[in-house]
Each structure stands twice: as C-alpha cells, then as structure tokens.
Image 1 (tube, rainbow, N blue to C red):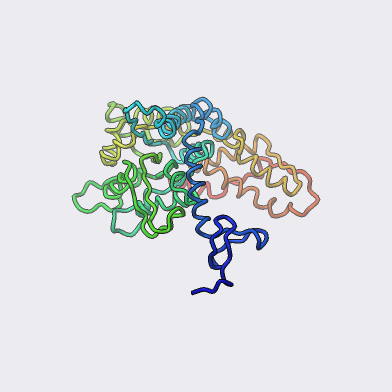
Image 2 (image 1 turned 45 degrees about the horizontal axis):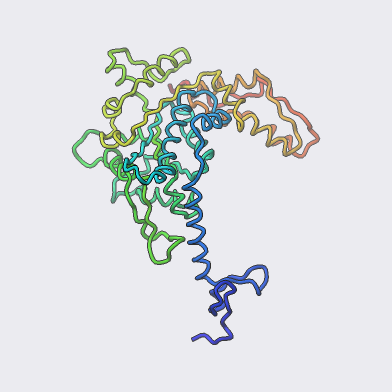
Length: 401
C-alpha cells in the first residue's frame, strides 16, 4: 500500500490519490486526478451532443453557394448534392424535435457516377468541409468478404472514428466515401466472389444501418467497453466511373452506344447517356440488387472539356494556379501564367484523359526547373509562358491507346 507521502490531493474532487495518477497544470499547485478527467470528458461529450442536436443547417442554396467557391461547372451535381445532404442532416439533427410525430424518415445514401477526374470525390470533400463533419475516402477495392485478407467493415469505421478524434457521436454523423464501387462488380459465377458480390455484401452491412462493436479499439469515454458505432446516420457516398455502362443504357434505349469520349465532340453525347442511368442498368453492370436499393440517390457528372479544365485551373477559391502563386509568394516571387500557358495545360490534361486530377502533374513537370532555381535568388517576378509547359509522357500514352 502506498504511503501518504506518495499521495496528492486532487484540486477538483479533494480526494487523495497516488502521484502517478495526478495531472499537473502550469504549476504543481494546479492538478486534477484521472477519475475527474474521465468525468470531465463525459460532461464535455454531453455538451457536444447537445450543441450538435441544435445545430443550424445550411439550406440547399447556401450549400451550393459555398460549393460554387471551390467547384466550377457540374451545376446539376452541385444542386442535387446540396439538396441530398441538406435533407440528410435535417433528418439527423431535427427529426427528434417533434416528439408527437411517429413518422420515421429513412436515410438516403448516394451514388456518384462520372468519368475519372470530374470531381466526384472533390465535391463530397468540399461538402464535408462546409458542414464541418468528419469524412474518409475508402477504395471499395480494398474491402473483401469477411474472413479474407483486405479491409473489413470494422477497419473502415475505425478510420472514421480516428477522423472524428475518437468522438463516437461525431463519427456517427460523418461521411464515408466508397470510391471505385464499379471495380467490384460481381463476376457472375456460382463460387466465392471475394472481390465482387461478396465484397458488395460486406459493404451492404455498413450502408444499411447497423451497430458495430469495434473490438480492441480504445473507447475515449469508457475504459471498460469497446466502442459501438451505429451507422444509421452516417452518410455513405459511393463513386465510380462505370466505364461501359453507357452501352447498357444505350441498349435499353435502343440507341447506338458511345464511349465516355475520346475527343470533345463526343462529350455531350456521352453525358446524355450517363444522365439516363437507372437502377436496372446498375444491376446489369454488376452491382447486387440489395446494394443498389440502399443507394437511392443517383447523381451523374459531366466529362470535362478544355474550357472546363481552364475554369478548374483558374476560378475556384483554391484553384491550382492560385495555390502555386501562393507557394511562390512565400519566396517573395510573383508568379503569373499567360493565357496560352493555361490553355496548353488544359490541352495536355485532356489528351491524357485524366480530367482535373491530371492538371497538377502537368504543372509540376513544367515548373520543376523554376521551383528548383528561383528560391533564394533576387527574382521578384516570373511569367510562365506556353513554351514552358511540357508535354511529358503524352505521346507514349497516346500510342498505347
């Protein structure tokens, strides 16, 4: 038994406890015991829950207005997402208010479909930032059937819990993006389909709204139990390019299918088919019927043409051009891009068929030399011209196709 000399009185509760269970403030006279710290955490958790329950929710117009600052184009997608997330969080935060109403509003998860690099993930990331909710992005290809090597549904929820700094209530109102959902379509055989139908069924357990006990994960609010996360109020957004589904849509409409577009003249035609996707097309593509039934809101995005890529480069609040200008500003250098240089960057990204996500690699390749040479010199201004933009790797990509 520890002697009294090894004990210190907690300034919060007055109880004498061992020195190694006391947390000190700026001086030794200010302290608190571990038991009181746990109590404070529980009190603060309750206050956070109450605050979130009374949280004011931005209306759809306000959400879209903020999205417009960071995302150019994709007007339909921004409008549809703004309405969907507004209805979701209105349900989460406001449904408890009317105690006499026994109508339960069910959750609507989303499926975003569009060519690679059209901003599917960027849109949802931006919404999570606007609404100040935790969000994680998981590649659906990492999730396998239970008992196989890969990521389990518990692993996904642990990541979300970590993103919420261990706060279960915050995590249960977060957003999970399941990217590349189209890459785990069922193979159609009668055996085990670990990366297809079986993986989709694992995802279905997450999406449909269930309670999961995360064994072995430290619960910040209880030392004696594993954290339990209810996915009922977590918003799931599945994304994918679904390359080839336009042929399924075209067959249903009795039209000639056109691909996602090798050149800009086909983009409009492609978008027309993509915007007509129905749940039956998704099932023919390879998604299981039960999972499709949980993805009630389907949002389609348009492919980006050259002008759209130029807008992506220049117009958003955090556009790539502005980001690189800010980087150079830290070295007291004013960086400018002439219009021809910007257009050439867009042209190269369009050739590579990487959409908006390919813009940064073009800029990085082109600015490598000046980013190496200019810092530490007396240079005050630099203008990037068309001849400075490198078409690195473009020819080899074109030849492969």
